[in-house]
View 1 (cartoon, rainbow, N blue to C red):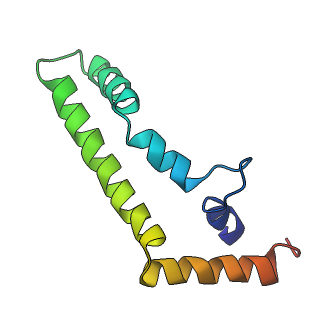
View 2 (cartoon, one colour):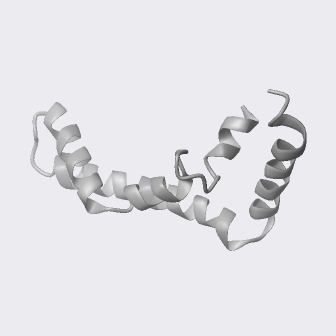
Length: 95
């Protein structure tokens, strides 16, 4: 599990990368269709699309904020670096 989670933070262009996920969920071109699809399942009641858009944007913003902690430094970044070191030294060649 550690290998899979840490892989999200790699810079390998063939891997799923957190910065790509963050870049994707920060676009209204992604949020708007998701909100519309969700509203459609609720019979497009008045105001539902706007509410779903606001909810999804708030969730995306929370994910982006949490993710940024690992890039900007501080304790979360140190934990991530420790996990990467553990992966590189102990797990990668033994999995």
